[in-house]
Image (cartoon, rainbow, N blue to C red):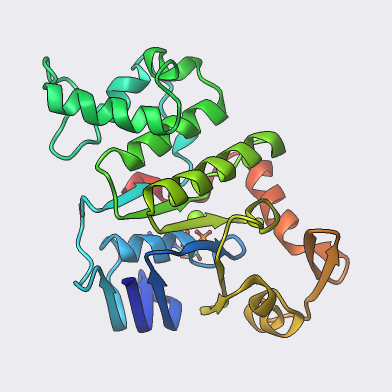
Length: 276
Ligand SMILES: Nc1ncnc2c1ncn2[C@@H]1O[C@H](COP(=O)(O)OP(=O)(O)O)[C@@H](O)[C@H]1O
Ligand SMILES: [Mg+2]
């Protein structure tokens, strides 16, 4: 079954075309790795599926309907949120606050809400974490609470924007394994954006690679090739495989690593989560 269908979709922000004529279809069994350099349009594409960025050309449907904001069937983890809530707010209340219709500060929580929140926390094994203030948690621990937040309304589609950002390799592996487990257990399709492909290998069914306003979608072996990526990066790209790892090189520069390093160097995310 088709969950997201794009037919020659164009997306623009502030009058500038970000993606042009992208066609793809995401099915219920998919775990899509959404790749591309900083600024390639990963966040914009996810926000279009959420109805937060208008489609300027072509057609986009989500569950067979035009995208709309606040769709309860979509679980969304915005980019960069893991560093935001420096607060004494407990994880449990933070997750509860996202349940449809809830607002922080309600004095009472109904039994149904409690059950929903506890179930989502159970899925990511964060029940104990949820009793502690967010400010005391590590990046990896917050990431799990954010995932619980995305799961709390029992989504039929999970959109996760750069969950691996600022996590060390061990934490990255745990997050990918957890999402893979949820994908299989809950049979929920996943779109997982990342700067880096390697942590996602072994989990994803297909890759959606963005660059220079274009997109390529398919199996890793069909998309992560010199010719396809040279077109998307608009530069000569070589793909090297070392064991199970894949290195995408532009001359002597590893393009994915380089993008990631910039993200760390200037000390903030380039995401637009404040619009969320
Ligand atoms: N609100 C906005 N207004 C104008 N341009 C934007 C806005 N948000 C993002 N952009 C631009 O759109 C392009 C795609 O951004 P984004 O989707 O965040 O890329 P990615 O998530 O792949 O890093 C970038 O060039 C970015 O600067
Ligand atoms: Mg982004």
